[in-house]
Amino acid sequence: MKILDRYILKQFLITFLFAIGLLLAIVTVIDYTEKTDKYAQANLTARQVLGYYADFIPWIAGLVTPLTVFIAVVFVTSRLAVRTEIIAALSSGVSFRRLLLPYFTGAGIIALASFYLNGWVIPNSNKTRLAFEIQYLKKNVANNLRNIHLQLDRNVYLYIQSYNSLGKRGYQFALEKFEENRLMEKLVANRIQWDTTKQKWVLQDWKRYRTDEIFTNAGQLRAEQLTDSGITLDTALGIYPREFENDYRKYDGLTLTELNNYIRTLRRRGTAGIEVYEVEKYTRYASPFTIFVLTFMGVIVSSKKSRGGTGYQIALGFVLSFIFILFFILFRTFAEAGALPPYISVWIPALLFGSVALLLYRYVPR
Image (cartoon, rainbow, N blue to C red; front, side, top):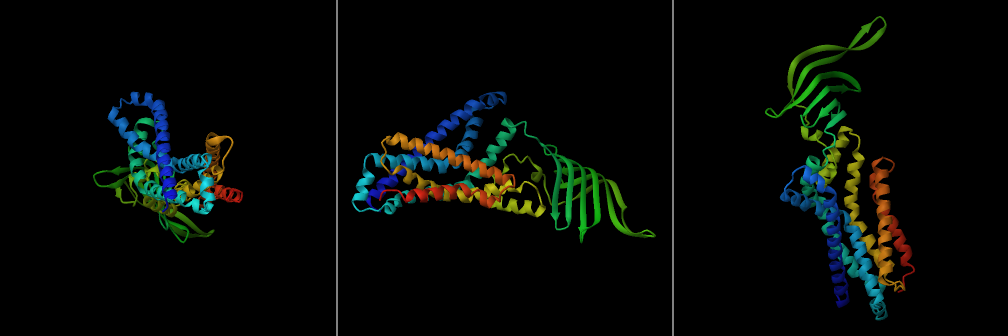
């Protein structure tokens, strides 16, 4: 690596670290100011609050990394352009493509670190952060679920009318077994309760029905026949209370491996709302690519010396960052609503900005 490459790479990484540190400091102060009253109402100690921000700061850092990279690239490149260092490099025979090497090297270092941290490290710290928010900051988040439909096996379906995650109990339970699309057996109970000692579900006021074929003068009929009933019944359903826990931003606390497994489980059970988890999954894969795209665009929009100076190009960088955030939120909303496939929607902002960058690249002085 040449001296120029080391110089640009060093400036890029130092500026990135400074920018993300400054941004995190601002966000943390704003967040603390907004939540001070809640901390006081919950009688939290300074140690508890500091522990919360020890998990909060890495999470925010993971979210803003692509945009911080873009701002850092714009700042470094615009300074090089103002001091005519880029013109000097191009005049000495260095091609514009060659000039991109240290930028892409830095982007590669950040992208790899970001992918690992967002995929496995930060989700583990988010588990503690989410538990803290649910307990102290999001007390209005409902602990009651209604109309739960789950597919436990290929031909076995579960239904619970209402479930309280704090008490680990549900009401109006039904378990149905089908065979060739015909209901063969049905187990119902007025109440279902998790027994922590036995590690099993206990059905209360339960009844078991079998569907039989009855032949009458009017033809063949199917009718439910009561076969068994009782006060309590221990049963193993293959599901656990943790699967009914509050799902407030649950995807933030799942590592990439856990996220893939959880999506497979939801798909097997036919659960609604799977798009939210798929969007999170594909966003984590798209984020490293986004870093390269924004690095490329950042160099292009700030490599030309401007009469407005560095301030003009930095302002342009912030405007483009805002537009990117707007597109990202817009297409994420479309995916979560089912209007677009998640594996397509999360890539659209990066591909769109990449196309614009390639178009602008044609007009960059070489």
